[in-house]
Amino acid sequence: MMPDAIVKALLDGSVSVEEALSENDEHAFNTPDHDYDPAWDYRVIARPHPRVMHHVGIVVPKLVETAREIGMGRPTVHYVRGLGRGAVAKYAHGTAPHPVLLIDPHHYRKLDDGHMHWAVHTSLFHEFGHAIEDWMGHGDKPDEEGVEDYARDTFDRGHLSATHDFMKRFK
Ligand SMILES: [Zn+2]
Image 1 (cartoon, rainbow, N blue to C red):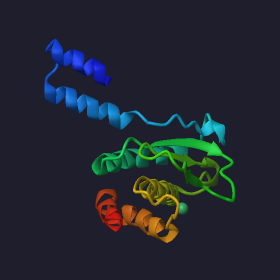
Image 2 (image 1 turned 120 degrees about the horizontal axis):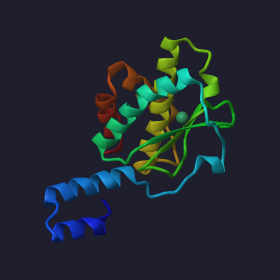
Image 3 (image 1 turned 30 degrees about the vertical axis):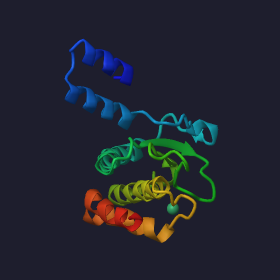
């Protein structure tokens, strides 16, 4: 619900204040304050490798849950080619707090399921770590070792507790 629609609904009594607030939060969570389209910079893949999509589909709810937990907006993942310099995934700089994450499925397609699960998870959480850095005002000096440790930590220890620890460095 849009904010003006919420006011109208409150005035005519069709929603409670609590409902209106939570719908407003949900709207804010889902609606990016940017209109970045990966097609401006990369070749968007319409039909990615199904096994890669399967493993990305396991990680996305974890990214969304993490974003909610820390008060960020909804992250989105897009399949592209041509990230450059051998990159397998990337955070589209400046898109936080509704981070756009890009992944090139071509690099993963030959991995067996176990390795693919690990590689897709750590790649996406690595890029999500860059999104957090950017969101916290450190986007201009990315800490590659720091975000890679964070990505591995989300796999080994769980994404929520790893993220809480990662956030401490920005306090
Ligand atoms: Zn990186």
